[in-house]
Image (cartoon, rainbow, N blue to C red; front, side, top):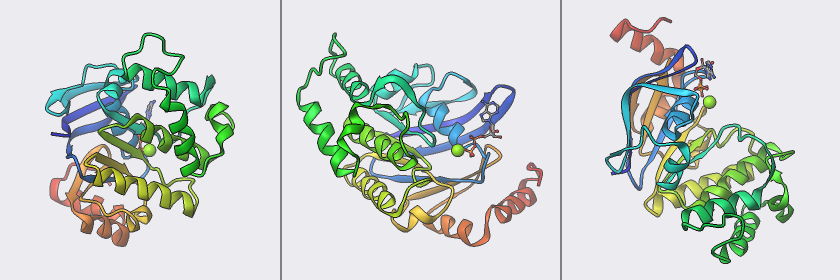
Length: 258
Ligand SMILES: Nc1ncnc2c1ncn2[C@@H]1O[C@H](COP(=O)(O)OP(=O)(O)O)[C@@H](O)[C@H]1O
Ligand SMILES: [Mg+2]
């Protein structure tokens, strides 16, 4: 059960960004993905979500044992996957409140996507915004247009809370956040785990891991799984750096160029 990535190889343009990647996110578990810039972390998140520019060459993606590899992104979202993006895109012309209403209506099977099928949604989105330290006016603004870095991140968390996904993927939620923002994200991640959701947490640094204890850690290098382990692996990366792992892997497999 949960999310399973099986022997996944994928490309974007001419570049193969993932090579035979295997990993699992069980419910009630925080699985941390680490890796240097360009190692394929965001690509992994996008391929799981079904972003169209990526092509799966081999392998599969399973949610609760069922393949979702050929489903469009909306259907994956409706099945319970949510991605809090590293750089959430601007959506000019669409208010944040409309986005939330459309999505929640879709999930409730409403025909009219513009008027909230469940009137409680409006109240709830203001509550969540306030809790996350977002100004209420932000709900009436166009999605991410002119949002500060921290507001974008908080807005992503707000959507994640309101959409009630089963598996949440966070792509570097700590980048661009101040210390209060970091605590909010960390609290939310812990609450997800406690309520039995699965978390795939992509992070560049171990900083966030001071607040959130991972159950499993996977290190990606050049699109491959270089190492898997527990919290001690994050510690090792923090202490010795990626170059150490890279050298170790090259020695063991002779397959990765330095
Ligand atoms: N649209 C694209 N076209 C070609 N190459 C890309 C594209 N998007 C990402 N890449 C490349 O794929 C590799 C992995 O990128 P990414 O998954 O963003 O890494 P990370 O998130 O670990 O920093 C990088 O070398 C990047 O330049
Ligand atoms: Mg990235």
